[in-house]
Structure formats: structure tokens, C-alpha cells
Image (cartoon, rainbow, N blue to C red; front, top):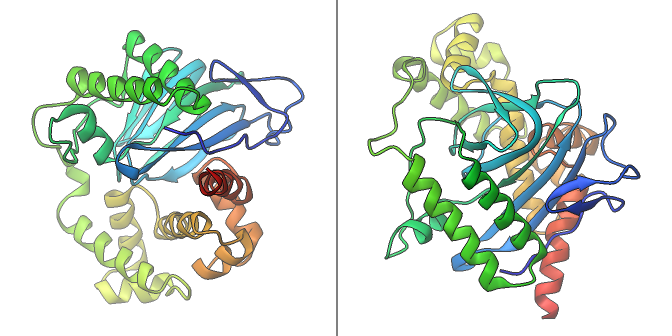
Length: 312
């Protein structure tokens, strides 16, 4: 695997995956973030995140891939599957695709963490002989497996440095295979009661309309009338099913679409316009709340890697 990212904040340095250095010009609350994209297995890219979070809290959001991280120091808290949970130093955090969650510091001293975002293809390569995509279910989002946490930290460091593709790929597959063997459930994923039935059906209808009309979204009253509910009933049903109100879901959807445009080379201002944000500043506010970095920093990381690949 070839690392193809760069430090979001140029003054930052990382030591064994940990953001260090007081000169770092990170976020307004001392937040420092490093976003890296590497060439993945079977041609798929793999995103890596290293962060020191001071006071920032991530807005409710979802990932299309698994998010697998380890807390390095401090105490992280997140809202996940209807519960408030905590991750201390050395513990592993697992967020499944499509699960709404938040994230932020539980104490004033903040926390540091590393995260990788593997898709089903990578998990298949790590756990099956035919390397078919797999979607394991993890009942617990926080697992106190210090050995696995340390292995994840070392794999993350090897991937980010990109010095030895054989080592980095081997470490990655070893971590994912161990994670699934030790902590994945054998049965099908259970759907929480509050996310099934009528509320789930209503949420699908609302999400489909918001996606179709992303550039000119309907009013809450219009959407409520479409599904035969009051605005209050609609908000309650959508939040019960999705974990966030419709406006936040639409912003998250726009951020996802904007990421694809930034991957393709569009500038942040162009991406903002194409997905329905009022302006680049509006995109930046939501992008930071969901992804953790600015659109410009994210684009630079991805495009730097593409340029290096073309030159190689």
C-alpha cells in the first residue's frame, strides 16, 4: 500500500501516530487532525484519521464504511444506538456502516485517537479465502482489547508511513481478521425496536425525497403532508428511525456527495454549489462537523496522492 495523503495542518508532526507539537495550527480549540488516504487492497482506497480533539464534538453522522479506531489517551464519549458510551485509552471503537453516532471529549483535557475506515471488501480479504465482501455485526461498539488496540496503532502507523507495503498490508489484514474473530457476533444484526416498523418506512420515504430534491429541498410542512403526518409526528418518527432530524440528515447526505466531488477534483466552492449548500462556508461548517477536517484539507490530501500515483 502506498500512502497518498498529507498532513492537514502543515506544522503538525506525528510520533507513533500521535499528533504532537505545540506549534500546530489546528482548530480553534486546539484540535489537530491528520487525514491520509492510502491505496487499499483490490484497488480500493483506505482512509486513515489521526486526531487530537480538545473541545470539538462531531455532529450526528453515519459512515458508508466501518469506522474502527483506538483511543490513545484521554476519554472519548459518543452517542451510539441510543446509548451514551465511553472509550478510554487503549480501547477499540467499532462503528458499523449506516449507524448514526456522535463523538467528542468526555473531559476538559480532550482525547487522541486513530481510526481506519475499511469497507466490506477489505474485511472479506482479511477473513475469507475467496475474499468476498463480508459485513460482520459487532454488538459492542467499545471493546477493551488492549492487544488489538496496540496492533491497530502499529498497523495505522505502517499504513500512514507507506515505507513497506508488505508490512502495512499484513498488519492491516491481521488487525481486521483478529477483530472479526474475537468480537463479531455470529448471528444477524439486530435492528433496535425504535428503528423498525412504521417509523423506518416513513424515514425511507422522507430521505428519498430529500435526496431527490437536494438542491431545492421541500419544507418540513410539505414533507409532513406527503406522508400524512403533522410536523411534530414527522420529526419524532424520523429521529426515532435515523437518529437525527431531517435537516441534519440532508446536510450529512450533502457532505457525502461533496466528498465524492472533491475526490474527483472539484474545488470546495464548486462542490458546495453542486450539492446545495448556500456557499463554501456553509459546506465547511458541516464538513468539519461530520468528517473532522475542512473540505480544502480533505481535497488536498486526496489530490496529492492522485498526483503522486500518476507520476509513479
